[in-house]
Image 1 (cartoon, rainbow, N blue to C red):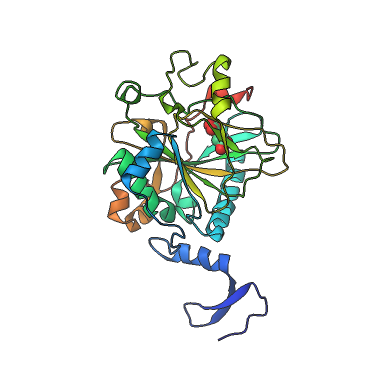
Image 2 (cartoon, rainbow, N blue to C red):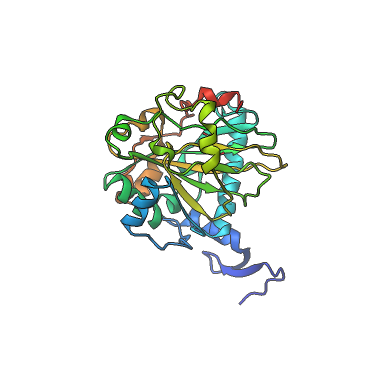
Length: 315
Ligand SMILES: O=C(O)CCC(=O)C(=O)O
C-alpha cells in the first residue's frame, strides 16, 4: 500500500495499477465520471411506503430525506453548479432574475457529474411512482441561487394550479430540491406554508401570487427549512412558499428537479437535452422517464421560466 502523507487522503489504484493519493471527494468525483450509473451509493436510501409519501405530499405538501447523499457528493454538485452559474451569467438570458441578486438557471443534466445519482435515487423513484405514477416524466433540471442581499420573495406558487388539482384534487407535478450548502438562519432559508397546495387561488394574481391580505395565513404556518449538504426534499410547487432575505455573505445555491405526471404539460416550458453518446449510456428505465431532445451538441437553453411577479423582489 502506498504511503499518503496528507491525512485527508488515501491510496487508490489507478487504471495502470499505479497508486495515487486522493481525497474522499476526488474519489467520488472520479467514480461518478467513470461509471455508467454513477458510483455514489445513496447514503440514506430508506424508502418510505406510498401511504407515508402520499400523506406528506397531499398533507403538508413537502417531504424530506436527511443524508440522501454523502456530503462529498453535495460538494461536487456545488462545484458543478458554481461553474454553470458563472457560464450562465456571461450568456445573455442564461440566468433568469428572480429578485435582487437571486437567479434561476435551467441546465443540461449531463453537466452535473452526479446527475445519474439524483435521477436514479431510490427515494426519488419511490416518491415519483407513488405520487405521479409509473409513467412520471422528468422535465426540468435547474438551480436557484439566492445571493447575499437577496430579499424576501412574495409568497407564491411556481405556476398556477391546474384543473386536475383545483377540481380533480390531484397533484400532477413535484419539485425536488438539493441544497449545495449547509443552510443557516441568516442565509435566507426557503420558507413554506404547509398544506397550502390546496388553497383556492381565486384572488391570486396570475393564479400564483396571493394578495397581501392572506400573508398572515402563510406566516402563521410558515416553516423555515435549513437543510444540510446531502439532504434531499420534495414538494408540490403549488405549496405556497418563498425564499427569504439573505443577510449573510454567502450564496445558497439549490438544485431543482421537476417531475410531472403524464399530461401535466410542464415540459413545454423546459428544454431537457442530452448529447447522443451520454443518452446512449443511460439505463433504459431512466430514458423512459425523460422528456428530452437528443442532440449532437448541447444547445443554449432559452429560459422560459421567468416568473414576472418575482423579478422585482418586492414582498
Ligand atoms: O429560495 C428558494 O429556495 C426557492 C426560491 C423560489 O421559490 C423561486 O425563485 O421561485
